[in-house]
Length: 305
Image (cartoon, rainbow, N blue to C red; front, side, top):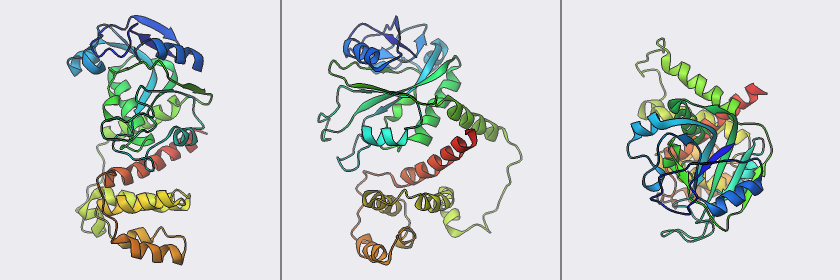
């Protein structure tokens, strides 16, 4: 994969990234990130502050190509028990090829947050994407389908993006399949769906009440049922996070009771439900819908095998 360097370190005002570097191993990435800020695409013109072009339409016009998708895992608003760690990522993405490099804020206090894992992820695509709209769609799909939205920097779905270097970074390369085929399949499916003109129209009269109140909820329940059967809520922390998300999203206790393994779990859930007070650390519907989207992603993966 090709990254483009500025030759400067942690400089928010630097606008030029003229130095292409081919990264094929973790050591090359570590050396690059230790010496320079970098961006993941080639552009005709430079950047403004914080790695964004002055105007979004100019960013699209000046985009030439990129062969890498990327994500910034910053864990903003998380605690040590709710953060998405490097080990969590390695578990969830064991099938795919990726690079990880720790950011300048890794395991340091940031704003009011405690020291947490903070890292950048790079997914080599194995081919160049030269359409800015398609590139941005790929990044949005990566964001929606693969990550819990509270852990990833949402601004990092822009085609114009740079990462600060980190002199003390730790970098890793995991060998696996290219994620391109799955991302492209999801993009193709969404593109076709957007063009459909024969979508059935419904009055809502025959829909369950939960679907009338919120269309997303009608999607979430079947997905939670599948996730439960797959063991996604077997760990106590996962099960409790589910309860917080359900309550924050407006579900009642009976929904949580669906995902109790034993009578003892159900008894604990009945006692605990009234003590759960969502504090905003989990966006309920986003958290639940991310489960739905990850299952959809898994189905696409199975179809590619």
